[in-house]
Image 1 (cartoon, rainbow, N blue to C red):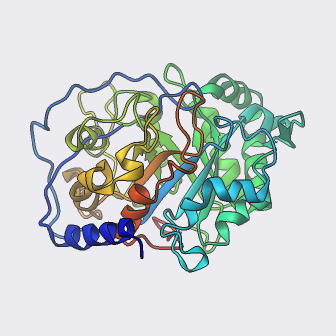
Image 2 (tube, rainbow, N blue to C red):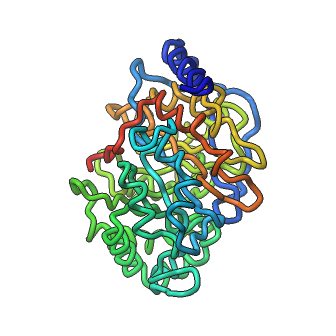
Length: 393
């Protein structure tokens, strides 16, 4: 066993025995291909400490968005050996090969253009509406290690195409997405980042059409359906309000869960990360109309693993990472009093993003792979593999 590995294991044993510290804040997406330039929260701790349950709820979702090697285009089919060399850390947290556990239990391939999906476009980068690099071979690479796979439709680049596709034929778009889910054995993520006037009526038609093929909670069906919301409740306001009321009711969910995306930069502290996530739990009663509280069991919180030209602690050093610093809140956050009786604790973490999310940033391919941050976190949280289906599936 290497000295580096021994040191990591010693840290994990000590970390399990340290009394819980507390509190954190979080974030939404910042690249041209991935998300908004949202106002960054100023530093400082939460004025009111969040209410925490006595006992933690285990993390059930511990996943990563995956941008491929070309900044989320997935424009060409990948060589299997080259893909493995760049992404081995995702399925092999210890470097032990097939005997090792994966670093994540969910991978979300990002992004599918919604208008091309509606038209089933075939061009230089797309085959029947799906990026050429999102092949069954890539899906099976992860699925063979019991890692769930989803495809993300949208992202900040494709907002106009979302609007056009919804206006043209939202129901057919939903049926096309359902067909891709069936063909590849994957789930679908809705990443619709329209902040000004989202087409919610037609988005509801998209969801209804998808659910006519893949009902929520169908046992054994991998075709989950989720949605991305902002880091907190101050961006994508109309979408957040509508989704919370109509699709993310923890007693009768239409969608399987939501992801609170990363903001325009990595939070500077755990408190800063928590403050964003807590906005979803608290809602915004002062808004007109208000945003109601969202049950913590209905969403994940997201963090960057690539932040610039150097590896982030969230990728390489679990002991100083935000996924470690926010552990108490993520596992013990209590529902809002209006949702009394709900399960405490968020679903877990999502990480932005594996491999090459931007040409301006480093890749998570070796030597910058993320076993020491994401992988050690998977061991610390004892993530379930395969990922259980949340909320009734």
